[in-house]
Structure formats: structure tokens, C-alpha cells
Image 1 (cartoon, helix red, strand yellow):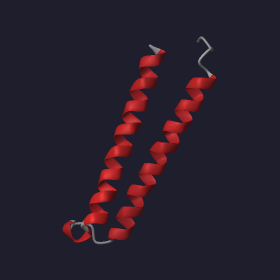
Image 2 (cartoon, one colour):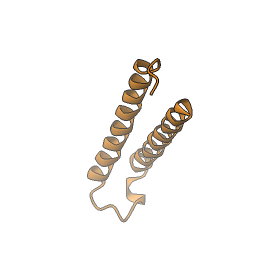
Image 3 (cartoon, rainbow, N blue to C red):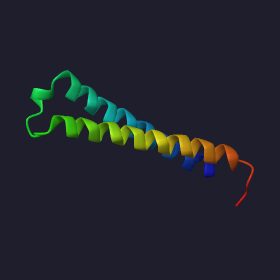
Image 4 (cartoon, one colour):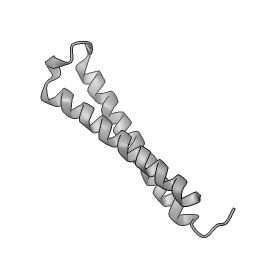
Length: 73
């Protein structure tokens, strides 16, 4: 069960990273095509922040799961 939970979190984090990278790529490739976002730079910065957040979570999960692999709860 522990391994499946960790794998599910990893998959979720990787999916979120991919989603926000794609959003950032869309803004970089065609910023005028996204009309509802008035402040494109702020929107792009927010996407970069989300990528960083999920990459940090993924890194922390990987470290946590390796360190605590032998601990049985």
C-alpha cells in the first residue's frame, strides 16, 4: 500500500509539472493568443512558480520515501 501511495503521488506531481510546462510553452510561443490574461508576464511567472512547487514536492517525496523505506508503521 505504501509503495502504491508514493507512486500515485509521484504520478500526480509529474502530471502537474507537465501541465504547467505546457501552459508556459503556450504563453511563450503565442502570448497574444491568450486573450483573457491581461498580464502575460505575471501569468507566465505563476506557471513557473507552480512548476517549481511541484518539482520541490517531487524531490521531497523521493528523499522522504528513500530515507523512510525501512521504517514500518
